[in-house]
Image 1 (spheres, rainbow, N blue to C red):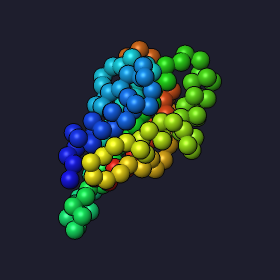
Image 2 (tube, helix red, strand yellow):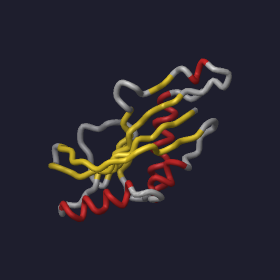
Image 3 (cartoon, rainbow, N blue to C red):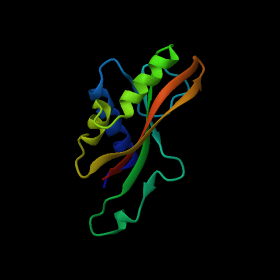
Image 4 (cartoon, rainbow, N blue to C red):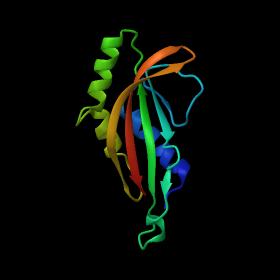
Length: 133
């Protein structure tokens, strides 16, 4: 069974292979440099232990991956975020294919939103990822 830090690091590695030049934070930063990807544990339900107690010994981990768009133009940023959450996008493929010693990853859902950082308001794509490991 993998631990939290192993799963978080594996997500970060998958995002680094998705796009060179993307600033990947496998933790939640206080500030960032876009374009950026943030690996955020799902609040209040980061891990389900029930599977870990079964015969397979696997746990179900839940993370949100935020891809922060660095474009100032609102329309262009939202279009780019839309491309990222569309079925079959390269970031979804990279996350679904991330190498794990034991288990697999599955992007379950996506959305588009805006977030305020100290540098200003940014559009981001959010992907909910479940890792069984």
